[in-house]
Image (tube, rainbow, N blue to C red; front, side):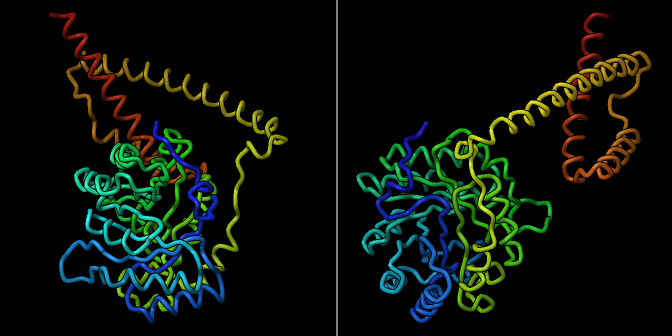
Length: 365
């Protein structure tokens, strides 16, 4: 278990349900000035974010303005009087950000995936009392995400938060990075005191999805949002499609429904427990049915061995999959869920049939 300091105790006047906003990249002093002015007129976030160094997949793309952009953050402090956060990927970035008085650092997804880079940042932060937020690694790997937080903790950093920005996938969906909400939930289960911020801009990849993803994050009890915000999103130098104007950010935030923990509404506990007990009963029935199904699967395995048949029967599997997916759709279950559910059952069924065959072969010998 890592040691975590509450957001309220970071010394920056912050609290949960944070809104972190600002451009994907700091481009010019004029751009920063315009964004700050429009935020002042519409919605002032709790923290201002700006990309100073931008890790790009291929050379030649805009890789951030660099150290020069750090001095432009004084414009934000003067106009909005809120803390600044920037991404750091190595010790030099940390040194320059600290020298510029940056109040909060974050480690990006491309850095989290590399323990060597994370450790370099940790070594440069020893003895420094500063909040650090850690984005999940590009690929779904809870150990890497948690490991980065543990490394920072060992370096003496307790003002910690995680940023859920979704995961890269070879499967095309409507998202730029698939949410895989289960990883954020599991991190919350393992580190219950750790604030988790959602980055709907990187999950959605399109500004039209930011509201939807943000609401999903709040429905799950996440602790805030990081939304890329630009005064002229269509002409942004990086990630133009996923940025919104300060005015649109205000609309999004004002339309979100915040959810409360049951600990704050004890009067609702009795009814919630009754509903949960119903779910528990249904789960027990499902498990009983699954056990019966696997008994039949083992009988099928015995029959296949007796008649020298292969365990995997392609035609049967395709028929079952197509049929069950359609049945699931008819009961308001998504195709993606049904396929994942069927794959899990099929994998276990094959194992049980193979086990029956191996056991019978061993006995016959």
